Image 1 (cartoon, one colour):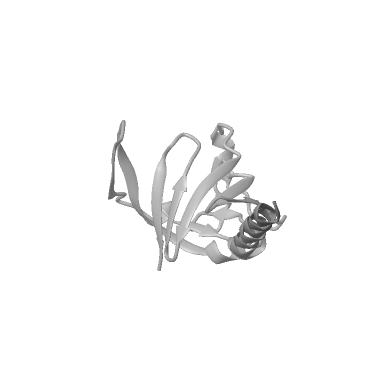
Image 2 (tube, rainbow, N blue to C red):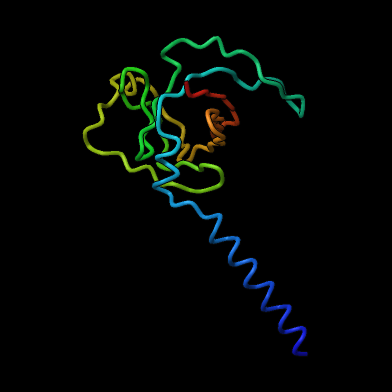
Length: 142
């Protein structure tokens, strides 16, 4: 009985230590992805036959991510239909825009579909954004 209790206690402590050591504070994670991101590829294909193709991006397609999670276009205007939260590498981060952001006047012409959370897969200088409609775009930081 004592042996089983010891094993159970050991497993509990091991698992709880792993969770704590893998936890990254949300502010630090948002700061890590902050920067200028250049659109490079978009995912194409369907029904399990997905592949990446050149996005033929223009400078307007690039994104600026701020440390508070706000996302801007290359003119430093907020992107239309911006998310209220980001899921960065499976960590949910609330976007905390400040009042000094300039609202993009073109957004008044767009009817946004509710997409409160964008999924971001970040590895070094590569960022893949998955939107609510399933669109996936790959960005590179230079």
